[in-house]
Structures are given as structure tokens and as C-alpha cells.
Length: 284
Image 1 (cartoon, rainbow, N blue to C red):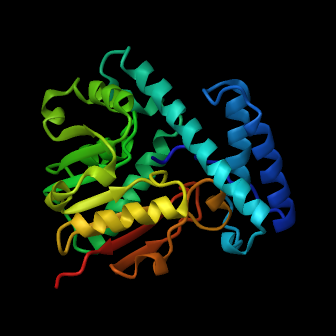
Image 2: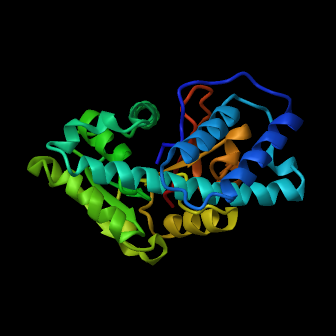
């Protein structure tokens, strides 16, 4: 997922002030009765994203324990809000004709287009041109990355979208079902990715969404599991975050991926929030 993003990048503020503002916003968000889209919810998350988007040199690992714990809580809140936002818009799209032709009604559609284009460029630069079969782990109710890639970039690729939430998959499935030919290349599978084993060996490339595994421990457990069962020579694309953007999304670093061949690490400095890490499972 690539939402909770904003096209208006503010200038940087001093690190101490940044942390104080993030903690204030976390306190306000924590007090909300609901994280469903509303004027108040949208305002708070917009402020948070604007604050964290500039390319700060801040290193999350160096922050005090109190701030670390706040960050972990904030990432969970961001994940819940993002899921509810996507669910609301996906449900709305399913009520209008030709939802696949109206994806741009989603407020962050442009961010997904940019991120998908960036990721496909990185794949192509590393020899992954038209993979036969791809898995997207954590596709959600609005599987925009898969849809944009399948429509605009990987036009012959089959996509298997994994999500732990059956409701999310049902809503996503209905969006895609409005185009019979497109639907044949886009499947939705419900379950915990840690329970998926040999099937992971079918994919030429696996995408891991930023909010799958919100804690470092959970993220690394998932990455180790995928590595164990993916095919030798297979590609894994991991979304991460850098600087203050790590208040919004979990961080994966090069030293977390020592069992892979690291092909590319890219940290955007524009409105695309997520960093992109491309790795390959070695062939022995």
C-alpha cells in the first residue's frame, strides 16, 4: 500500500521540534474514537504526513526509548487508518459503473502510479522485465499497485494478491471482477503469509507491502519465511522508509537482508513515501 501520502512537501523543522510535533499528533490520534475517514481523522493524518515527508537525516535507532515506543504505536495507528480509508473508497468504487476506470477518484491514486512506475523501473534495471507470475503480500481492499502494474507495466504477468483479511479481499475481488480479461490475471488469496509455504516457490517476484509486519521482529520473521520458501534466484521487493518517514512505516535496512543479494536500494525524496529495496535469493 502507498496511501497516507501527500503531494505537498513542507520544509524541514529542527529535529527536536519534529519529534515533539509527532508526539503531539500521536497523542491526538490515540484519543480518536474511530480511525474511519472523517474531517478530524483526515486532518490529523495529513498534518502527520506533511511533517514527516521532508528528507530528514534523523536515524530512528538513535531516538530515546519513549519515542521508539510512540513510533511503534503510531505505525499501528497509521496502518489501521490506511486500511479503513482504502476500504471506504473500494466499497464506494464497487457501487459505481466501471470501477477500474475510476480509480483516480481515490485521493492517493497518483502516489500509487508514481510508486509502481518507480518499482517497475528498478525491476527492469535489474533484469526483471516481464515476470510470468508475481505475488503481492498485503494487497488490501484497494490493490492499486497490482492493478496499476498489471494495466500499465506488466501486461502479461499473473498476479496473486495475498491478504490476511477476507473482507479486504472480497472488496478487491469485486473491483477486478468488472473486467473479465483482467480478472483472469488477478487472483486474491486469504490467509497469513507465514502459513504459505511451497506456493511461494511459484513466483518470479514477490512484493512485500510496507505495513506487513509492523514491528521489526514481525517484519524479519516474514522476510525469513519468504526467503526460505521462495525459488532460488527469485526476486523480493521490500518497501521500507527512511528518516522521519519511519514514523509512518517500518524500516528494513541492508544489514537485515544479509542472506540475500542486494540489487538496489532507493530512497525517494519527493511525495513517494516508501523506500524500495530489491533483493535476490542466491542460487546455490
